[in-house]
Image 1 (tube, rainbow, N blue to C red):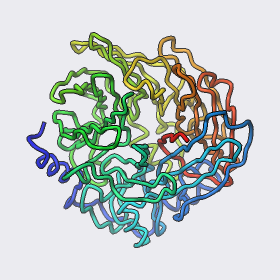
Image 2: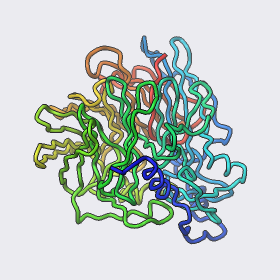
Image 3: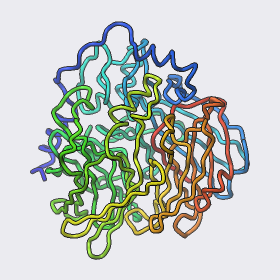
Image 4: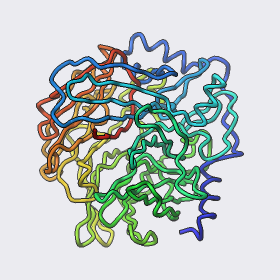
Length: 501
């Protein structure tokens, strides 16, 4: 722990802002990445998922393809992801760099779904929109004649996730503030400041909500092997924020909670030294173990650690803790970081290669008291974006839903999968090969675990349009009970949330 909040703010601002660091080599006139992508588009329909959305956003009404909206499934689906990749004929090199585009799907019984999309107007967005070009380094690339960074929100793209908190809609990123949006209009209202002196501290993209409504989150300072931990009350007020050290500087995107612990998996893409663009600060180091760290919710100075085989992950399904302290969790893990440092660059050029497609599979880990661990893998296909019945966050559960694909599929996942963590059995629905599926969200409809609906979006590359599908979460293999299609395509996104009517 750091001695006081002032010390924490000073350190995180210095690291997160990266002010004064030298930029990368200047780009030459003309942009081969932009030209390669534009050349690929006519022959590669999947590139629609990585094309720019209009600066003014999108508005439309979806056409019904099949079925009807299930009774009781009324509300708004919000989604977030990168949506602006090029300006002045220069294109970002990495998919994660694009400016955040938040989408809303309003679902009402008897009505066609109404869709809207708006860019999150961060300070970065407003400056660059006015200038007509990119001005600052991003996560994985740096534009020509970039101007450097002036603070921790200088490169905030607000492009990764969204959450509802006491009626407020927040667009989330990794290295800076949550950005407030009007949940009805998607108008940007500025950064969320949780308390005095906390402006700009990283508030990551995967907050967890306990069954009692308490929100937990973290932000990473990889350069200092530290995390800032957040505890937020259900009404959105800050209960606690503090910094904990001695957390290895591996890239951490997600975490899990149990009734007693905050659980972090630190993979082998490790911080080496500060460089810009920021991804260049990390190098793969397979000589060390992956580290699992459980921090006590009640006393952040108390922790337990485990060494695991080397690996990499973006997303955790969930976790629970037995009475003896044993922690069980599942996560989409791979043996390397090939997509983060390869595939996410390829798609920006309009290239799909099997060598850089993620090979993440769903793993189940058991972390025993005393440092012993067990790890098993479900080897019936690749997996990402694991989702759980969020009413059981931190509690023992049986099911995980995720997107899936098979070796040889290089243009994106096509399957929605329901997995039984106890038996390993799956139910799987495979869309057509032309349909790239996005993260499914579970929406409860009854008291039992898994009694509800899966709502997910998808890009139909053949129709050049984005679709919305609803599946029975207990009977995924039966396919959609209702589907709709927009008259246009949206960029592929990352994460979403549900706001009930």
